[in-house]
Image 1 (cartoon, one colour):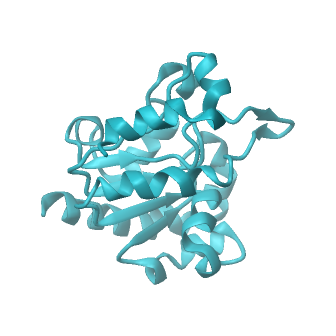
Image 2 (tube, helix red, strand yellow):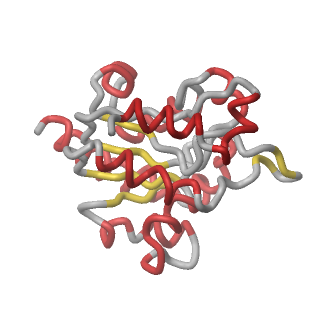
Length: 193
């Protein structure tokens, strides 16, 4: 089964029929030569309609945190993006709805199996961290991110790079001052290997 076979299976899955009927395509990027996989929550409506990942202010900040150019991010195939759900989940009173809980369990293992060179999985935000780290995740995302060294070499937890996350970043200045340089160093080592 190839990555494109999996994409088609996602489209054909009855659980995604409503999205397919809207003309939406599954939003993820995966390549067989990926060395780093970014696991986020779910695409926002703009991303869903644009049919691309992280082409916004969140993406600008994420690439800055990773220390990579747009070219490296989008064109080398070394970085893949697997949201927890490949479709915009809808709106709630306080923002977007959470990704469907069973979605990643069904599709991520199939896609990760097609990416044998992955050396690091960056877990963006609490949904991804709780799903992948399970009981190893701390009680809060802040504590999980602060304990990033516990999850290496496989995982590196980070907050969501959204501009709306400015309060968290202001309260946790050590993340950008101390953790981001460690993330950048690791990413550069992996991409250069």
